[in-house]
Image 1 (spheres, rainbow, N blue to C red):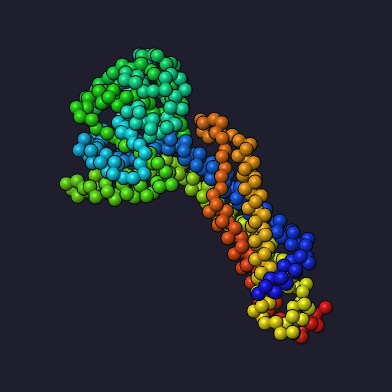
Image 2: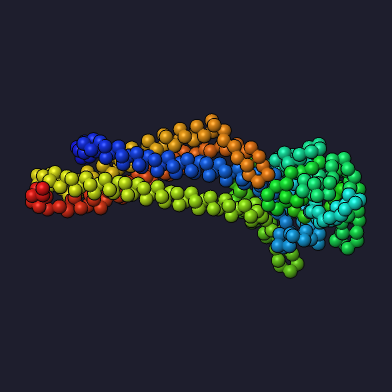
Length: 412
């Protein structure tokens, strides 16, 4: 086997220009895939982070049927104290959860005493909300970065349209679940930067103020947003909560709770899936590049070395060894191309990180691109290249092994 390896390497060295060209083509394909995966992955992670860490959270729990009618923010589908206690118990017993925030969501009328418009509001405990969605504070463009009793944070679109500033007095009017109307005066404590997607026009106030407006004798919660310690454990935690809470049935035998990941709650999940699909097709392009390159080289090698193949066959070299010789040549080209591509790809990714390229995502400005590639991805791409290199060599190798030695020796 060692002698076959030496012959294969010698044959590659005999045609240095062709070997260099093929290796370069394979390496360029590897570099392109690694850089694309790292950059697209960075953009995807940043996009998900902006959505989940600004307002959505990683996982949300509601009363069954709430999400289907969330546009109307139904107060009749809030979680009552007994149900809330059950959920909090399960959250406390589920590993991997870092923080959670209880929210009261409701619609109301917002007035500056001159104009009136509708508004969506979220009543929250400030500390819990900040721990659950840590980028929330960065959305406060004006005013103190906090949610105080008697104050309200309003979205900038509403502030501009109603010409409301920090410190102004406004009135919020809402209808509670029994149909009675109640209002409360607030001071504008801050202006919130809008975000893309649901939640972009939502205002925030303290949960005690929300309960007062809605005249809640006992606190009822619309949703619970959850933040995980490790985002990679999303589906594990989701599955655990679903199993535990899904067993809770009402008197009619129907589920009481529903658990959703951010993927089911945000339209941007479709963009994330699109990035994954693009990555898959880029990998297919790499396979095509390697396949065509290696196969072309091997076919040419067989054609140019017909008499040589005939000679080694005539002196008793078995067809299996001839096949092995060409397969080792393809393997060597794949190994060399993958190694060079991995080194160049990692170097380019390092340069991109050092350059600190920025871009805008929605209303978020100056987000820094931080491409990275895992050892698993590098290993997987390299293995794909090497396997395809060997497979591309099979047909030319088989053709060479099936040559008649007499006909090969007569070839001119």
